[in-house]
Length: 240
Image (cartoon, rainbow, N blue to C red):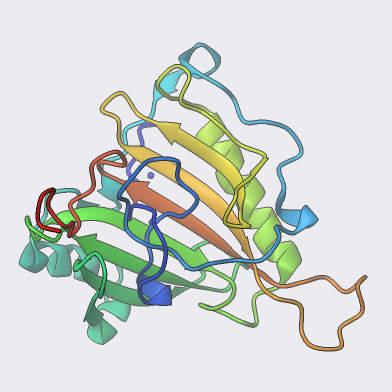
């Protein structure tokens, strides 16, 4: 993220690696993969810091690293090359079938040390064809070999980072089980209404696994330019 002091909007179900932030209460956000019940390990020990009074530096969600909201595809590809030169040689481009957004995806090892390979998806809006969201996924399905304890540590590090920033008063939430089965670890809006959202996405337990066995889960971080009115395909009123 580019936050002073820095992964697409939420609905239900285009391609897994390119999904935007899930479990949102807002309407019309781009889709996310479905998950099972949230793992206990991924739950934060305590709610995150709540508002500007508890932090010194204001949050500013402008994109992710060199990628800035509002960039067109050419500018975005150049930004990816600056940030991840090797990964930029293997950019995957695809269209989401429901929201009809374009998604550029790269895989980057050790984006957070020891957390395994991260899948970074940059979402371009349906009408504008400009960057509207960045979603970062660790663990399954991006990296099935990621260790659950390493993902817990990464989640705690990110939660602490976000908790050190000042967010719009009343916008911060965390430690909540969402209806889609994921766990909301942190969500906050900056002064411009742009959102950072961190979720744990549990995976199904392997067949025959003992109940005490640590279950794999994914960790998803989304930076969203406009969570309340995302630039995605919608049927217009009166058409049907």
